[in-house]
Image 1 (cartoon, rainbow, N blue to C red):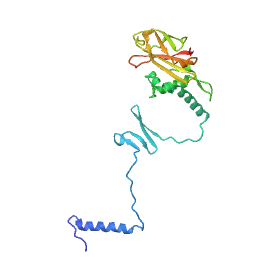
Image 2 (image 1 turned 90 degrees about the vertical axis):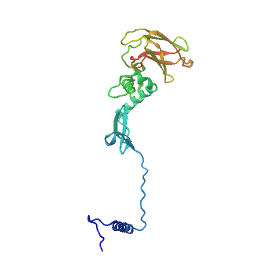
Image 3 (image 1 turned 30 degrees about the vertical axis):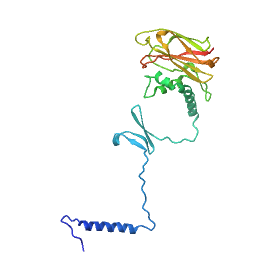
Image 4 (image 1 turned 120 degrees about the vertical axis):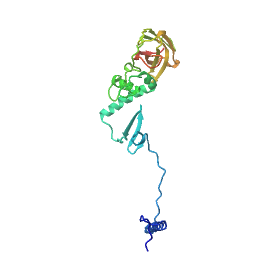
Length: 260
């Protein structure tokens, strides 16, 4: 006996419910012995975050891609393949040069960030610009015995006038005396430009940073140094920075000195 249907051809609620129950029971009895309903794990691990909808940028890992943002620019890059074989001679040469430069400059990374501020090109950071300058100009020797030529290193670059006729006196134990000319104009050299002074101790392989030691109009400054530096060789650098910390001069290499 067929159930009554309404004028639209639909089964009454009771008949519809009975039909669905029979179908469920049929599926249950059709399952093989020992069947166990699989559990669904809903504890998903977050891989990436999509911003601004489906057309927006994402951050994190999604499959074989990594999303990130740098300087308000969104990037998507593939996960690099692991390379087990050794690099070519050219690759090993480049890696060695890069390692020598970064080992020398990384301790003053914060100085380079404002020393090369405004010199960024093609979205490269100030630190990377400093690294590139050293790679191009300050490497001496041949692979694998590369070294840094301290006299060719720049720790700042900019449009201000660099320190003029700066001299360094190390004849007094425990201190360094600096003198320079107060060369002032209203465009690129201001009386209140701050003088930054750095020393690289070759024996200890470390930088000493003194900032600032004075201003352009002071024409002289005295720096106290650790007593245990006596007899050790240092390389000295100096540069000016404006009072608003927006512009710098090119740094100058003052010279190589043996401390008293």
